[in-house]
View 1 (cartoon, rainbow, N blue to C red):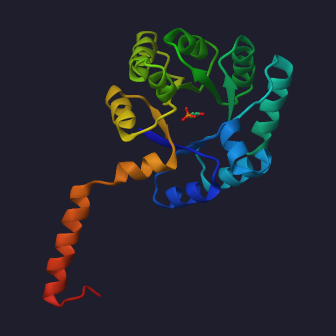
View 2 (view 1 turned 90 degrees about the horizontal axis):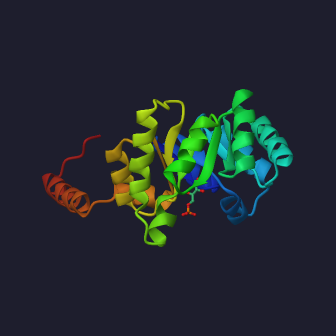
View 3 (view 1 turned 45 degrees about the vertical axis):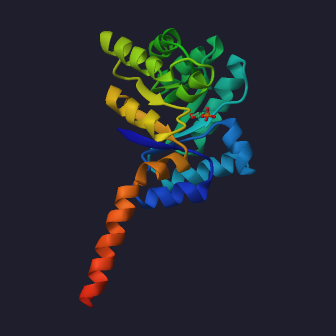
Length: 218
Ligand code: E4P
């Protein structure tokens, strides 16, 4: 399973990349706004940290402007994936950019039918938002299972299911059990995945016993 980091905070991406935990990055207009930086500048910097795909989202809603924005974003670096919303114009832009060889991440997906349309439009990634569905008492993980089943039924192997809006480790584990190709995770969730109280307790007792030996390895 590929891990993308869901943030525009360059220092976080750099630290996680050093630990080998970054296969790509996703951003959205809210995350760029939170970073307080110019979008083109921050995307360029992230693209230098990771060779993996870096999703940069268009902010227009009409076809012509979205397409122009998508081309501009793709021009920032060769590993930019253009993110477009799941609207009719967004799907048309997806088809145009995909035909030009640009990987497109279709975002804000909340139904299996929407995901089917994104695959037909040539998306490289579909981003279903599990956390936001859970927030309104719908089972976000059921959406992942449905999309994977539909894509397998019709061999839509070119569109990877990129599980988004992940809020906690259980989301990640459930998505991995279902076989989703990618999960995009906020840095705090990646750190939650590392932690286990038995690991901490075990390490503490190993080190206490080691100190008693008076030895040092080096
Ligand atoms: C990723 O591509 C999405 O923009 C992101 O996962 C949304 O997460 P949120 O629902 O926690 O804002």
